[in-house]
Image (cartoon, rainbow, N blue to C red):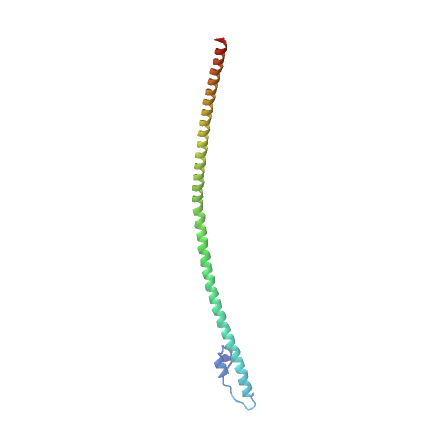
Length: 144
């Protein structure tokens, strides 16, 4: 196996099928095969984990993008609502002021009416009292 071959990522099947040169005083081929099988299993597990993690990262990126878009949308709605609330609030306060002004005006008119009625009643009571007093004076001094 050349240095270039060792440097690149090997698949589990390429590890299992790797062929080595034979020498007279070489390693036990069965031990080498067992080791290569173990190494291939580890690479296979690592590749599967990497694929799972990549999938999870992609799912999280998509979720992140969705949440950013939702956040942007909510900020825009909040910005619009803030500008819409002010004219509505002004209109509401204006209407409330008009109602309050009308209530005060009605109350003042009612008080005027009550005062006029009270003055009228006072005049009537005073007239009756004067007539009654004159009648008593006339009846005491005139005929007896």
